[in-house]
Length: 308
Length: 257
Image 1 (cartoon, rainbow over the protein chains, first blue to last red):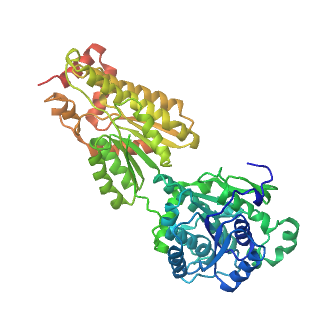
Image 2: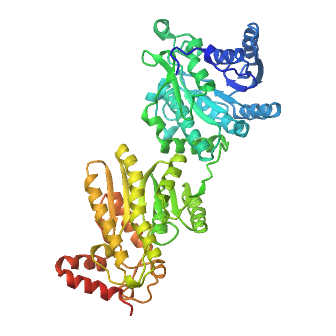
Image 3: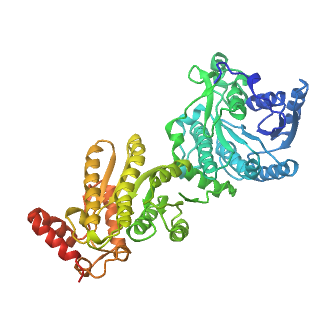
């Protein structure tokens, strides 16, 4: 891996169709922007049409080589996820990269999605789980396609609370966020196993932005001084995602994060998640539960038979 | 529950072990030659116990088969934590009249495949600091066996190998169990072209009983287990008898009636 890798080091993305969820601000915005500059056709999947249009206008003002398209997606509403997937599949017959970026963090009170899931688990994990499942046929049909899911260092203190996934009995904002970000990794690695099991060319990879100042921290005002001191810009925070989405040396199951000061800032490098993120049994269990909760049959694991 | 790989899972004790493991909620990798049998077992176990069953059709008598089995498991990204070397067969008859090809196949399956599969899978178990190997030996492992000279010798190998490996791995968190059944109601007798012999006339255990016994012992980390009191007596006698008497005893069990 090149030292000090930058967005400019990405290979040309002309002809690629890339979906970025939460592309109107923060890391999602910088991801969409950098990909568009490299020639990609970026589908910005955002909840608010107005904010998405404003973001797209800002990027277009920089005259990128690629194109930007807008499609409404509210990850806190499975009906919206389905509508998005339908609309996308009507307009596009390929999908090179799906960037599962959108996220929500540390809500002071427990909130729920339209379908009744605790909102961090619902948006960060279940929404993206369903989205990936609904788009998997397009991904499988596109050579060397990728699913990049943005996780966080917060996966380290997360556990999957199978007894109360939606935090109905007790809500702790950091536990709920940690669970959702651990779920992103478990999902990525399980997805990769399932893709491998069917010899698919599609790969699943993960990235985390380190400590990046974005709207994600909007509920944490007391951290402002800390953030000014330590956090890096969204432009830097997007680099691990961009690396995972575009570089030819990326392999399925890889995880990228910043390279300096406790993976909080810097340029992308391959990192390791905590061991519990690689637990295949937890991952499979989470997968099964997620299938049941979303009703999306994401990439069946029809057991294989082989002759040797 | 951990994923188990079971060789010779298309019938007999192997099939019974697969059922027991599925009942514990564990995923399975079934290895055997007969595809239809394995597919049928998979179709039975997957919906009944909500487990995943993977099928590898392989003839462990072939050179390189263990390597291919191992590579396939790696390719599928499966995390095999329980290795059950169950595949094996016997061949009844006087040694100097037996088909050399078939004898070679027997040694391949009973001895080589067991050894090499264990060699491939164990490093991963040791690295994780947990896991089980269950090798299906036989009461035959405890004595020489006229009329099945090679079969008895292969099982002596399996027992010896298992005990030594269990000791080597004693602090690793990985256990090695040798399950030593006597006469069991399986296809063994037909496959060995045995006809009527005293050893089987005296009553056989069911494959299910043997499998449950062996599975429990494996989870408990026992090293050598013999199911059934008659079999335990049979394996104890060689410790008391002169070697020349033991061989006569086992001949009486195996010679055609």
